[in-house]
Length: 158
Image (cartoon, rainbow, N blue to C red; front, side, top):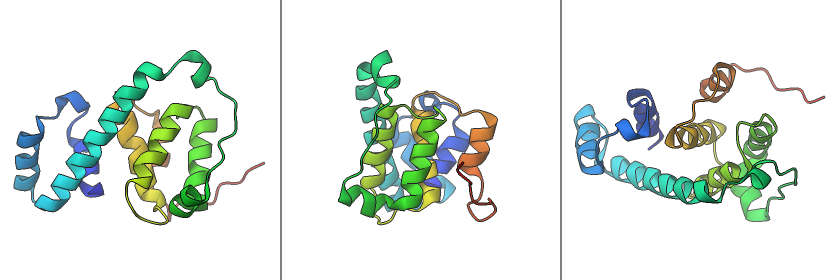
C-alpha cells in the first residue's frame, strides 16, 4: 500500500491532479500494482482526505497555536512506538504539523493495524497528509521525511 502512496505523491504533484478512483485504479493496475493493495490504498487515502476535509473547517487560530501537551493512551503508545511518537512531537515543535494534523496522522497510523508503526511508514503518512491538503514541506523537512532512516545519525535533544 505504501508503495502506491509514494507513487501517487511522485506522479501527481497535487491531489486534484489525480484521476477519479476508478480510472486511478486502472492506471495503478496497468503500472503493475496488486488489485488488493490498490483497493487498500484508495480506501486509506479516501479516509485521509475525508478527515482532512472535516478538520479543515475546525482548524482555527486558537487550535493551531495550542501549546498543550498531547498524552498518548496505552494503545496509541503500543501501536505508534517511541520513535513515531518522538517524530510526531518533533514535527509539531517544528510547526510542520498543527495539533489537528497531528491527530489525523495518529488516526491514520492506528488504522494500519500494525504495531509498532515503522518510522518510514509514519513519514509517508505525514507526507500524504500534507500532500492531500496541498501543502509542500520545505526542502529540509522533505529530506527528513523522505531520507533513509538507516543513513541518518541519531537526533540529539538539548
